Image (cartoon, one colour):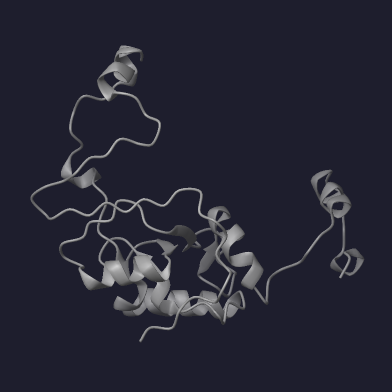
Length: 187
């Protein structure tokens, strides 16, 4: 079978939502704690309420396994090596847009299994945590994927490269704009 994620590396999720629907029908569920949407819309200014259906071009594409597209698979494998994430299996990374998405999401073993078991009948609106996106800004970097802020909490404990722990006082120096060499940071 598929290699599972390392034991204990995933912090408690804040929110994980997976909505299943076939291509003809959708099921809408109110967010936890949300009141009646019509009543809530009445309380908002007129220009803050969208009453029109989104065009098809604005709908989210389905999730696809990163390994299903050769280019995306290579980019994610390169990022795993670059950041020293040897213990994280490629099988748990997904993208949108038929495997060619710029954003890469890390999903749990259970979500991975559900997405792979029914790729045509399951439409996941939200799944996993965005951990990488295509690095379009730093052209000199040897890695074409950059770690995004949402993914730091999830991947930092597993990173063996490109990681530099800093104490609160060292972070304060950095935030104040002081020049701090890596040699001066506590090991």
